[in-house]
Length: 114
Length: 113
View 1: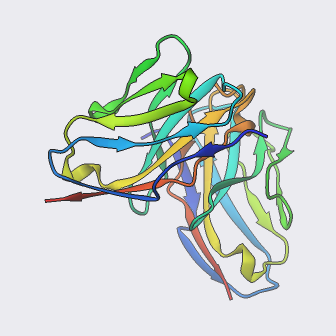
View 2 (view 1 turned 60 degrees about the horizontal axis):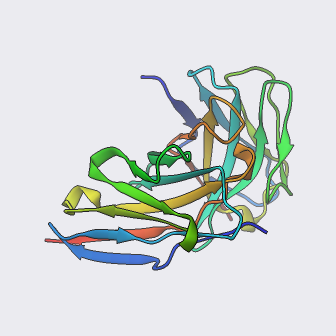
């Protein structure tokens, strides 16, 4: 079934540790995104990529980095995790980055930083 | 700055009753407006999309939304609620590019038997 795969499903991480959240899509979409979802705050964009080889900062990029080496993969790295990064992280993709194409979401990674 | 407001963080209706979830965007008209639904422990899924071709937009599962420029609104409705409609719903106007999507804070819909 075509879609977005995120791994891991959940993770408990000690503060200060490095962590990479994986995201892979098989729809050949050009654009990909990382959001975090926190109670009462809705979804906030962390980083995005309109096409392979390019990335951009979203609303809350600090403490996170991304890369887009190819069309299918868009990993999110926390270089040194802090408790405020406890959240549910969603990867999404869209056919284009122009806003006309709807987003397709993965099922999320629940991250707890202790 | 563009913004979106979803009135009511939690709405509860009886099974078979009308569902009305409210969404108001900021004064500048977004080119695109979306409603997404999120079921427990899942990512968001597209319900419907407005693109100016028609002010009344029909989506999946008998949901529809009407764009009203004079009221800066894009409320979501469904004539008759089902238990399976229990979920969280997000209104999302999009300005200029997908990186400019603004998600509302969400409305959790509960259905009473």
